[in-house]
Image 1 (cartoon, rainbow, N blue to C red):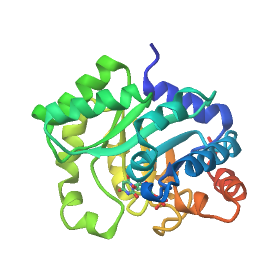
Image 2: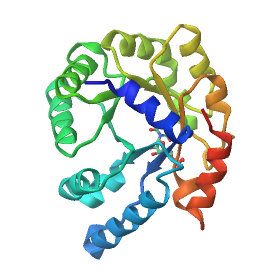
Image 3: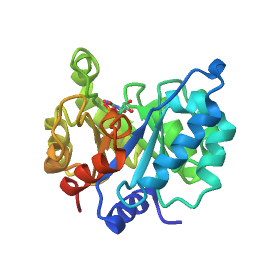
Image 4: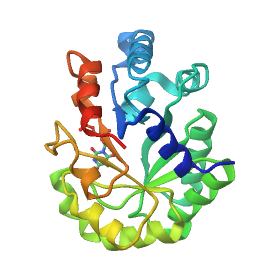
Length: 241
Ligand code: BMP
């Protein structure tokens, strides 16, 4: 089986796009909005097929749709996207593995986990279970928001070392602080790097790729725009292979 790194790069090169959509749209279930949201997501994903390489689905969307609808969304439509579950696992190995099992069942191609949980009975368990089941793992050695610098990013080097030791397929590193991307590449890291923080969080499109990222992750600047297709086209013009 070809690994996730290969699959993710191949898909981006095929459509010449370094854009990953962060899908975080959601609503409150008691307002009976789930079917409407499902239809909106189908329309959005259909319209972005040639512009966006992968879809990172966040917890707000996963909570709203639920496992069954996420399974249908990922399985029953003929997408070329790779799908990343952004559940940011930060727990003991037993729970990490259980979460991976659910995500595999929903048909995700990869999962995001925190590196701060450490190797032993932490990231090693998540990567081990993901390997067995054939999906990829991204770890999160540093974050894009200002508070990231207060604690988590101070442990960047340790987080990176834990990630390398565990053998993750990729890193999520901030476009708002591209120096972390550069450090990882200068150390010779050749796995995937995907980078959030573009648009609403303040980073200009292209900065993360210039620092060595494979993909830039864009959420609100696409899905909240009046015209998501034009917005995605604008980002794709800058973010080519
Ligand atoms: P937006 O483009 O709307 O700011 O979305 C960014 C996405 O990337 C969100 O899904 C968020 O959870 C994720 N993200 C982030 O913003 N910073 C990080 O450090 C790590 C993330 O996963």
